[in-house]
Image (cartoon, rainbow, N blue to C red; front, top):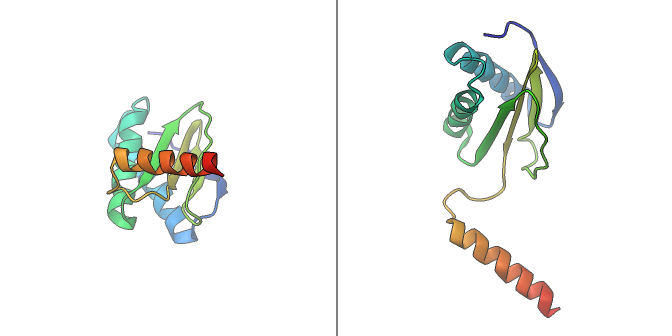
Length: 115
């Protein structure tokens, strides 16, 4: 487990949700090996889905880049010592199938091509 204090780098989450994110990070670090980033991320994502509805994403690691779109009020990026945590919710309905999402993109691109 990492013993350091969580330091928020950037967020637009309400304070209570930020606290919950950091609590879950500490809990996940207690439950899993620090090197098992995938299990740590899965634990946090699952708990956020249960608490705040589906479509949450969680990235955990020591060195990664990202470029995301998120719903307002659902983004936090923080670190505990050298481990970084990125948690956010996207705007897509998780019940939408991959084919439906692709269909929407194809329809939108065809509409813009027609313009």
